[in-house]
Image (cartoon, rainbow, N blue to C red):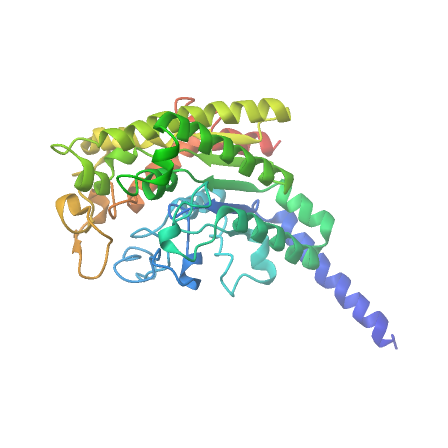
Length: 364
């Protein structure tokens, strides 16, 4: 009869072997960092006003209940997971993120944050990007306890990583008040150069933590969202100054990523020009099946762009006809168009390649 010690060792080896086999046959892991465009519920666990955990958020999600996603249904990470053939990643703060669910990946994003630590201070308790990266380190320790350090390193190196930052550094920092501290420090061009230089440090930290395929999305057309139309627009045209911010930020981001890849000797980082992607359906919504790209489905005031989406807001009956769900965020259907471009878009949108090309290369 085997001793209790050897029986325990046998069970431990069997347990670890089970997890290792899971990693070998499963879709690649997926990790998400960033702001409300990609947060899928971390802020539900925080004392903050930057939340999407009440109706009508989630009205078109399979459960028809709010999840913490700033969407009427699926958000961009959900749709990428579907394309990968994987289940959606859980928020890192979700108590259910244990055991084999850890091997799917994790979503570390938190609504309201930016590249800079002083972005989103009005939201108080949010997970700033430095803490998201610390949580990623903690995640790797947790997974190492399950499958060992070598398998964990392989899982992280082989994963797809999505990071979305920058919009809040303009909307909830530089432009947040008519006279902000950052406006006093920098003109718009210099501020953009500054946040790109800080973004570079964040991306290098991700690389140091083992990320080897990182999709970096730029800022959408900030002057064209319903919030900007309601507060800054003249005659319904895209607001000039936020729009100029996006036009400066995206090319600088692409340039920075090209330099990083050259320095590292590999196409680690992939830039997605979100402004170009969204401009198509904003300037010609009817061509994409939308009735409007100016009016949010859920909101109040001009363009439904004032305040936030709540149970007492105006709510459109058919979300698929609206490019924007709320004053700031695309609808699920618009997110599907964005994700399709991430996978199949030309070099007008994706630098140096799209996600389908990455998948093909990495499968060799």
